[in-house]
Image (tube, rainbow, N blue to C red; front, side):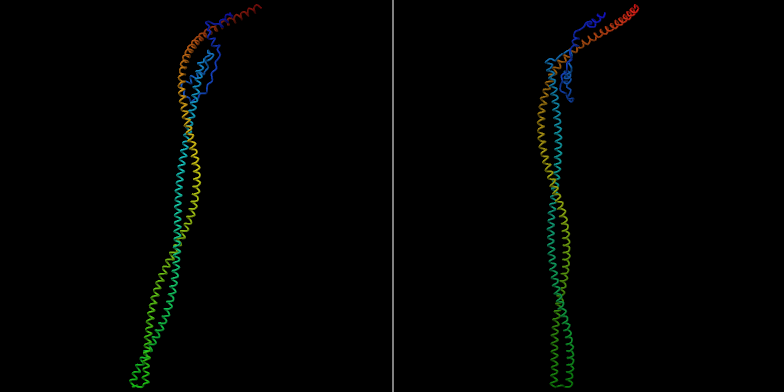
Length: 429
């Protein structure tokens, strides 16, 4: 019975040799392929490559030459897809760098425009400072002119003072002469008054003597002579009185002329004094104005000299910095232009390579579609075959389970027989 069981298990009912072949075949190793990028679009090729690179069914020991060519072709397509995608990524990064560089260049150009505007504003301010310097020069010339006018007025004032002093001396001399003439006039008036008194007295005495002579009948020659002498004396006194009157008239005339001249001198002196006062006031005003203008000009000159020096130094520094920055920007612009040209040429070549790769990819897709169709047919056939094998294995498993149940029953029987046999042996002993 045991020998029958071994034969049943080893052979079985309706055994099929293909199952033994499937079990006996070694497992085929998968062929490694380049790592695929997760960003690649799913176009059906990836699944096909996974199917091609997955472990083949154990019923095949090796790939045929055509299958190997298909696998190599799939590897090539995958590698080209990876290269194209890498080139696209690099091209996109290059375009981003170019856009960033262009934005930076625009920012630099904007900064350069602002700096140019600032330089123009500073140049305009420098022009204003130059105009102020010219105005300061004009004010200095005006100050010099006013100073010269002030000096001329001072000279005129000195001349006027000298003339006033001379006129005062003349006035004093005239006043002295006038006082002398007044004294002489007074003396002459006193003398005339005395002579008139004497003349009146002589006239009175003469009239008395004539009356007396007539009364007494004086005929003496000596007496007549005395009377004639008295007449002569009277005539002499009268002529002297007339001369004194003429001298007095001349003195009065000279005195009147001297007084009129003194009045004219007084008027001229008053006019000169007023003019001198006006000139002195004007000179003082001009001196104060010149001093104020000179102080203001000195302050302005110091202020604008300092400011112009600072502005000039600042403008020189800014100009040097801007020139350096402009030169740097120009060099960077040249570099960016060269980089842009190089990137454009590389982008053009990459675009051409991408187009060529797309064409090759389309061609490979067509070939892969044809191969896929062949493989689909083969896979369908293998699927049907596997289904048949599965059905067969399921039926064989069912039969094996039944045989196991039978074997379990036989084992139980064998165990029962063994225990019975053991009891018999014990009983026999």
